[in-house]
Length: 508
Image 1: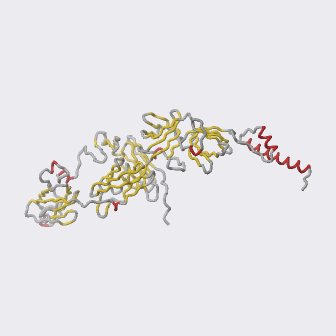
Image 2: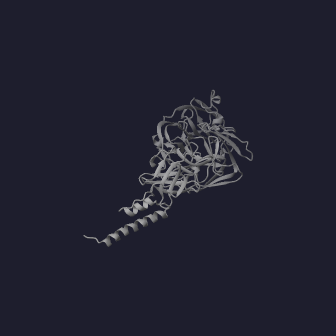
Image 3: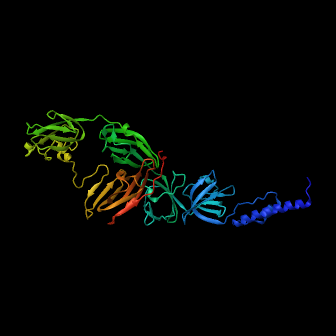
């Protein structure tokens, strides 16, 4: 096919026009097109415009996510806390803090970077890990004051603005976490410039251990000790859940007839559930208990834990607390708690005449004296002393699990309590009668304060000052924990926590 000279001229003019339009578009994006680029575009059959070293914007930002498949990097602009995503190609240059070329795959969430890019097309020109930024790895000594935007690290205060990027390394979506989601046992990577925090990344977090029930068959293990290598030590309750640093542990359940040891793994943000029916139980140790009743000729019926016993012979009981009931037509009823230890014991019961026995009127519980034989008064665990039966603890009582010591010296009915946890950390808290903490949301979630079940939201309880760990749990949702600080001001306080994240589909 022959093409006239006029036709060839039209083709050349068309190519030049297309190149001019393309160059004009780049100019609108802020690219200065060189004369060499323009000449190349006007003389070659295909116009190639280099994007190397072309940019119109600079920023100091924090890496949020890196998507190597899509060749994108999402940054968080520090001053405003806004996100934007830049695309990269073979013209984009990425360097470490020593200006050595690296792949974008080596960038880490939380890195503070200096970026140059084209604002309109969101094309990354260069990205350099900032040499002005400092990084602290494996930070465990920290605290924060959200109200005053203060972050204390290893004894030094830093400014923690609301625009700082807080992340969990386990969440690849780059979800921004709340400061309150960082717990005391978490391990952090902290980055900043001068005295300002730019990013905090939780590199080792926490998960949860839960017992499915406090019942093992027909035996109740409430009060047994649950121990995870001293990282968490708690008594078993009817709802037992512990916030535990992620990792593998030797778990022990000891007491109340349980004697179980096994290896457990705690996954960050996950819930490890122990099937209580699999907990090993020992055959109960039986202790002979002899009852002496005064007067000796009294006709009585004795029940222990609801079962009638032949009390004139030694009664073998398992170690622990039992319900004792003694009834007689001529004497007042006796209702008491028996705390059975390891050594044989003798319990003396003095019956008191019922003045209305003849008319079979209802009688009230009479006081009686129960004492142990031999040296029970000097060995609280070997027999049953009066104080054990009463179950009353005086002031200054110490809880074996928390190391809490009561000291009613805070004034206005307040009580100051010093807690020493398994790691040796000491915290002083004050209960404030007359003032309450209320929780409004999320509705229906189980609410735990320092691993103690308080009820379902909404709820209120007596104000207790200090730093606490709040855990929220609901079937089908991700369990979440928050660190909160309750001040000692004479006022009530109300909390509303974020909505829980659904992890299972709704039932059909």
